[in-house]
Amino acid sequence: MKFNLPTALALTMAFGSTSVSANTIDNLVADFVQKIEQNNCSADLTDLETSQAISQSLGVRVHPTLHLMKDYLIEQGTLEYKDRGGEVIAKTAACGGEKVVPVPTESLKSTLEESGKCSLSKQDFRSLLKASNIGGWEGSGALKALSKKGDVVYDKKTDNMNIKFGKCS
Image 1 (tube, one colour):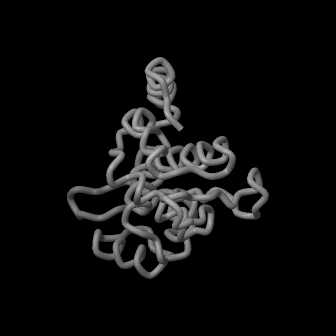
Image 2 (tube, one colour; image 1 turned 90 degrees about the vertical axis):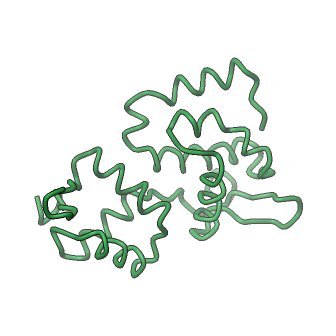
Image 3 (cartoon, one colour; image 1 turned 135 degrees about the vertical axis):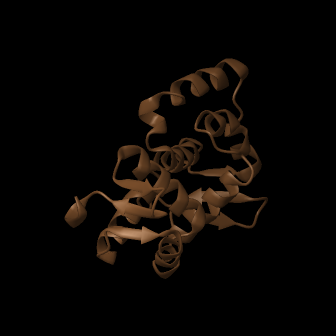
């Protein structure tokens, strides 16, 4: 998918709104999958890199972000990688599959709730991500989104993340 300049500019303006940036990683993942669905359920990775306007408007880099996102979605089963020229295929309902688009913030929120802790050090957080098989890219993006919503608050004095939802609210 190649965007012409007016389309790229319109997308940049539309996705630059605060409502979208409040949940950056979830919207970025959903938009990435939607672009593949709209392109006959498959896309060449070099074409996906042209969605740079969307990536920039959300404050992320095309490299390595799109590749990390692709790897994350392949790991989740939402995309399937075909070794023919870098093609990825969506496995969502819109494309005849059964996979749903993952929501990284909900996965992290669920993991934090299941941990039973209301405060975590950075090291404890990293260990929790690793134990829960949540990668650093989606984990840090989800943490950023939860922090913007006020569900997780970083305490500079104690160098801890305090959970502000569920049993910890």
